Length: 349
Image (cartoon, rainbow, N blue to C red; front, side):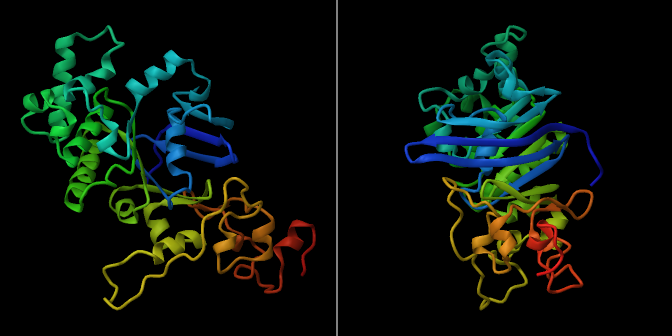
């Protein structure tokens, strides 16, 4: 994919939650860019930090108990983390849209659909009530809702799950934002409606040039929609690359494990899927080394003791894995080489 303008930049983001049991280190030194007009996928199992990372962008995580320990979130050259409430409100209502995970609970059951779409314009004086309604009806048509005048006056309980999700997308898009963040937008939908929603998002990207951040644990969604992919585990990014590199030139053992755990069209009906054994790390007390080391069949001593740095494999492909180190047993001519010795200034075992 050709290099595009960076529209959003996340730098060294660290976000945690204070709880009665201690501090949960949910997002640990995460950095990535979002380019204009692209669909960026963030994938990983439950608890890996992908949703918290997405909500950090608009500061939607409750503060407290959540708090930022480090990092920058740059949009248009300005750091969202340093913005005042009015500036942040403008970003939320005009520049970056958010589609939440569950449309059943994200819509206000006491408000009509039209009023909920128009809420985005409550603080704006540059647009009349008539224009607001026209904009609301127009965006409802754009997301594939029929009989918009009737739907405009209905309440959420009168709509199906798929229709509610289209309304959520309409709310996120009504102000024509530059970026839309979708946090597992098809989780509660059946496969037919899921396909329609994904096709709708791709079509909107083509028509409006909107950048999309797609948060999901479904690799099928990633393969269908995304230009680039970020793989998260234990609050960290462990691999990133374009969709072809992630699926066909996989380097991190966790990403490989995800690939082996899904069904493929070329599999026989008797083939058995391979699960990733073990459990995710305890983020109350994260491991000092690679977060995947305890579940990795290829783990070496260095994996448990030191966090791997970034290994750049191509202009867009990066992984954090000691197996990519020049002294690792798969990469070194000296099969007895020990990365720990290398870290400590030696070259042998």
